[in-house]
Length: 637
Image (cartoon, rainbow, N blue to C red):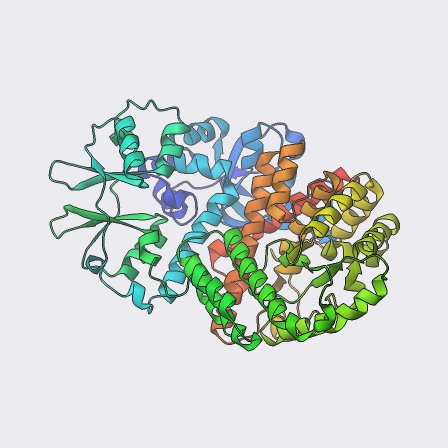
């Protein structure tokens, strides 16, 4: 049973300032919250929330101790499937937003102290604090955005030696700023932005000192979504007190300021604080030596396979630059995949003249797995195959025989430049991966109709196929056939779901918040690929097959699900945020390993993470568990 604990408003306020989202709230909103929180002490084993208690009526913020969540009816101490809250986390926000009971019992493990506020206070805080409201609506997304800013700052710091960032801003050509007075109507400001084709307008006083800045993000969040009339003064919707920097500051310093503040524009002022210009993130990075366009040109100009081997280092640097610019992880993986596609295509073009036996054969080079999904990271091996056409009067075996030696040379060449050979031999040089259109159909049909464990495993890799070289029509037709074949087969989908649910998120048992594994130097780690991103990928694939959605990318598959049925967009947004965070963390780990000259690995030690990353990773794994619960519900598993 909960009992009142000692209350100290100043101590409560200081505690809140250490944890998101409270660390970003306006002081007056923080005071409002601190004044309404009531400390409650729970003894070991006390239930803080209960699904049978009716709609949730209290917001809790854990201040001391630990709270362990458990599924209804689950013997927590035996199952080891707990998830744990740590100080600074608040709950049960989802139940409060929906006006429903909580779904799980949350119980004190040891003595715990929670700060509690009733529903009326919760609703009032949402109304007055934009930061708190956005956190409630997009809890994981807000935390991920905060982590992204730190990643951005770290990446900028790592790029500090780049000469394009090591010059003073006054040496760059600054864009003439678009300005207006604070009393100018919003409509006038928007007309100026449209006319000048810029992304922002600076609001200045009579002495040309910046008072605020208005960007397209402000237009969305403060005007469109709040139905503010365009005749209102720009001062009512601008971002006040814009971050400024003098022209003597280095570009590197400006990039750091942008990264730390999560902004894309800076006002450049003179020594008296008068506006001289505006510099954007795009301006800062426009002179970077390694760019996507330059790399693609380098690939296209390569005259030998060996010339392509050095590009891997440039890709690592490009990834660092994109992180420094705050580019989302999904865009980064698409960029990596685009470059890898072009490298594969160039290897094929360079190898083809050496094999006259394949001249005249109509075939396409297929990518499976992460490359097929446009989701490649820095740590990848080969998953590829061939789809060929059998001319009249010839046999598939004869065409295959002509292709296999060529395919072997391509696979070995790709290995030489950094794409390691697939341990499972899922490569074009394997006769089982070099098939005609009818053979691929027969193989896929057998997997769907029989559904053995081996078939299910192969389907999870091969079904994410696409053509990366050669005619695309055959792969497109094969995809359409596969959708028609798999969609009505609920038994196969259920087998796929059952197989996917065997791989669970690594949330720990009763005595820790992560379930650790690994051997040797990788002991006490979690696998971000197998027990992280794979959970989201597998569920999205199954739902896409059931809905005849031709997309191969995981996020695109989630979008197809959202457009087709009853899974809420809020759930899908949370799953996308969780998936993207784990991918971003995996990318960071690989970047750090590459910089240290270590082999790339998908494993990470949670104890090595900072508090924010540990919290987000745990929340991401909880979303993975919720996703699997929905998958199990859909297929009655």
